[in-house]
Image (cartoon, rainbow, N blue to C red):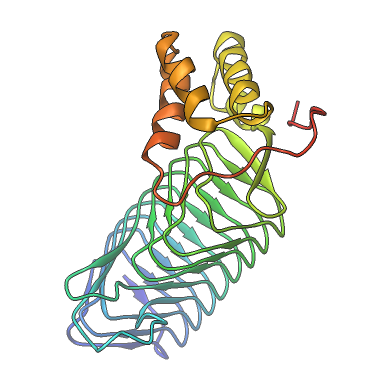
Length: 265
């Protein structure tokens, strides 16, 4: 373990011998850090925080600090981070706000500079949270979703698998899987580039295109369209899209107000 002499580490911390700790790092409290993790200069790790193996925590990041929630009363709560995550400069990830609750980050995620992950958020695996993006409390981001720069996501919103939020967009409604969202919770088309990179075949993408058109490009009752597609024996991908819509508590994003095709080719 390489620890810079200017680092300040609590005797309560549990640091694996294979961790590298840079200058002026502060590790305060019962923080656990797994093998192979690198913590760069001026990062602050605090609270009841568990960090897995082979993570990179860059300069000035604040990990596991108290939530920005006026109702927080000092209760014991947690931050749990998995393996191989990259957390870039000055990002913040806060622990849970209710007693024994947790913010949870999965594996292989990439948080760019100044990304903000608030209390009780849950990130899956291989997500990207770009620079300046703001995730409010209790947001859930599913696997391989992409939240672009300076996006704003309202508390309790769910973002589906392989969804993409374009830069500067904002949402207070759930973002369906496989879709591109921009503006104010408006879906414009499928994340075709992301689907191809994820190995989706032409047939799978075609089935999702047809479902998207039926759900978001036609006037009418969304519930009726979901029922019609469900009765037609949808593919597993379309079934996942329909289930997401049916299970949404906040309601999902709107479709575009025009019929022109704008999805990524």
